[in-house]
Amino acid sequence: MNDRHVALISAFYDALGRADYAAMERCYHPEVSFGDPIFQEVEGRDRVMRMWRLQLGVRNGLKSEYRDVTADGRSGTAHWTARYTFSSTGREVVNEIDALFRFEDGLIVRHHDEFDFKRWSKMALGRPHGLLFGWTPMWRKTIRDRATQQLDEFRPS
Image (cartoon, rainbow, N blue to C red):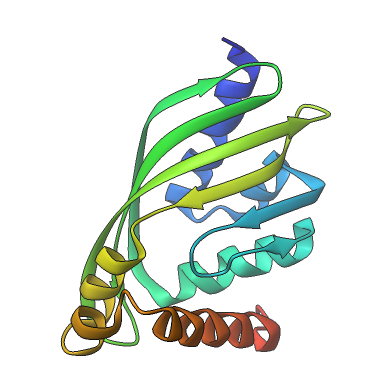
């Protein structure tokens, strides 16, 4: 167990819970990459932080909790729960997420979140889209393309 890396993961999630972008950014290596089932791959600290600003903007009232943080000298894991209202639909979402981390120079250089896309789709989008299409590759591509376009066009104030 690497207490310094456990503390780094905890600091990241504490900052996420406060929407403290500066504190979140301090946890990331300049060459960080982020991936999840929606955004897939986002490269570089500036773009990853822009992604977080975008996500927190469309997740009205995000409340996050984390647990089961483990880490060694090279990698770490955590489980976190994101509770929010999805702004596009006004639907309540409770997303259970498993996170994987890799460290370099005492910072997070790789952050990957994994969650059940079909379950998320049903909660965020509702019927019929989430229920009927949430599992199809075409629907996933539509959601991913929309997220990438929003990220490319997003300019934080």
